Image (cartoon, rainbow, N blue to C red; front, side, top):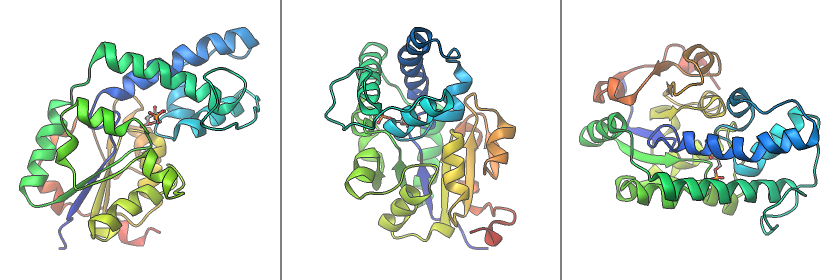
Length: 248
Ligand SMILES: O=P(O)(O)OC[C@H]1O[C@@H](O)[C@H](O)[C@@H](O)[C@@H]1O
């Protein structure tokens, strides 16, 4: 049996509890927005279905579409506000950075134990996140020097890589590590993230259930679901994904 040689970790919700802060910031943005416009109220289910794991402006556009709202895209230089997709995304970025500063960022202890275990076993490791805040979140969590490769929202924008649920950012990370995707594990907590894993020829897709629900993670592409990465050890590097070789 071929060992899996690389582990590609999502960041928010997998390595750090920052998905929760992103979730709060999106609610702070969209709950009053929906109320003011008389739209159906924003709920946590909207985050999981439309926003979680996706690049910032894709999340805004997908949520607005769910309420039948279409705004001009605008540009990343738009002042935080409500007139364009980018302006709304930039407002949310102000809110989430405020939360990062006031709440602080510590990694999940179980995730650090799993990272230690696979690294000690010789696996190469990467972070693959849609977030453009990845460098500051990794630094705040004291994880910046733990990864061989980082493919984040900034790299994706610079290299014109489509974001999750497309598999491209994960494929790029495996390529940069010099490990075939088929020998790489994708670790994700978001539906868009496990979909990205299932859309590529990866060796294994692990779902971490931080609220999405184990069954939904499985039906969207996870081969294996855990509540916390502390449940796993380096033996996962020997885990074949059932039927994986028949996938794209
Ligand atoms: O706005 P950022 O920091 O670039 O992050 C984009 C997305 O990054 C993902 O990692 C989060 O799951 C989403 O909640 C977030 O919206």
